[in-house]
Image (cartoon, rainbow, N blue to C red; front, side):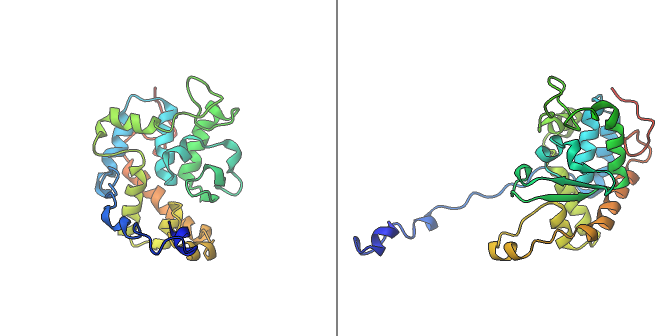
Length: 231
């Protein structure tokens, strides 16, 4: 219609203000726990009758602050153990931009736990039905439901839990947003600001993993002890 106006075919566009008639749907926040409920979550994970791979996946997602699909499809080739960096390629990211994650000692321990299980395969968290494929992106979510968190927490809500905690602790918002792989909605500003604050994120990620480990004290979690015995 605007094209017709520009070409002089019609005087005006009668639909120019139609967007104002329709209200934008309210964005619903994903179910997540409060920061002080983290110990409850870790205890539930530790005592749940879930497979080692599922337990490691949930904790991996929690420590790395990644989205469910990004975590479940982690490839060994994306991990640089020497540099302690996990690089997720653009095609696997929601915003199609490469995302680098500094790996904490706790995150590396999770990889060490998975090494005997999937180190010879492509994916860190392989599917039970077809080990050549990654586990389902909803694996963590379904496990959380079975643990009794239905309506209280979804797997993507782990990111919200991390964000809320880090913000409450006074960490820089730019570092938190970078860790969550959020891209500035302002396209011009986003195009110019390509930094991912990798080095500056390391202390923050280390604090977060340490905080999770502290919450795990008294629980048989992957990051709490190497003597893990799970189903």
